[in-house]
Image (cartoon, rainbow, N blue to C red):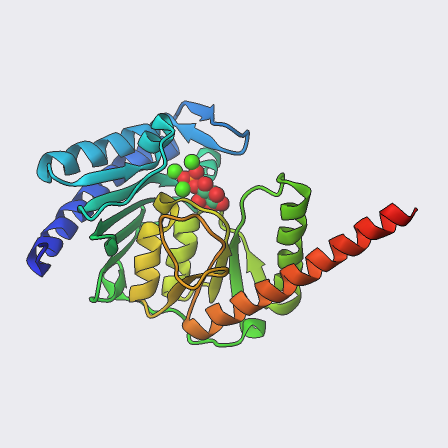
Length: 290
Ligand code: IPD
Ligand code: CA
Ligand code: CA
Ligand code: CA
């Protein structure tokens, strides 16, 4: 059983390690790096993604030999689907926003989370470029550079700034129409739509109230785990818009905000998707008649 003291120890060690990894992160951001393309031309990886993940996992493993690890670059390499067991498990994205990173865009960060008995207990997001360290321990609040942060209490979508992180629109026609339909709705309803290009930074922005809400699609556990806990500890919630319960291991359409706003987004998605599907059906039946 992991006591509060253990969790505090895990946190302090992971925090100091993440700060150390931040130095490597900065070197790669400012200097030369090897950039490779993964499966799609919009999915990049650099030698620094691997260096940072190696440093984090090697040191955490040495310190906590009975812990498990889910790291983006390791998992993608094995092509296995990550499974969360009851064991303490570190969920790591060495660089979130690699495309920004390779372009010299500062919306990029390191994301480290710990789950124990499948529950998120530690979240750390570090953006070394702008020196922002977001942290949370379950039940103890969320912090930016040691100062408490809170999600906004804005409860109306029409008065909100909304961050979106959508997977590429170069997807099947049906999914593409659904996403474009949602985007149109967000543009029509909110005060503004933002696209940072880093899911973890997006969640951190929800937690500190720099955006009121966020909607994103099908991201992996390593993109969101730390941010989910940080949002929750900042008084917000993260929900799967098509399910009753959110499971961090299942990439889904999700909304993050205060409870009221998150529920408003959920309803908007249901209504908008229905309209899009109806439009598609009408188009298809008209084409058949011609
Ligand atoms: C990506 C970022 C991006 C999101 C992508 C993710 P990566 O993570 O979070 O904002 O839109 O879907 O894959 O690959 O830069 O770690
Ligand atoms: Ca990636
Ligand atoms: Ca990521
Ligand atoms: Ca990554």
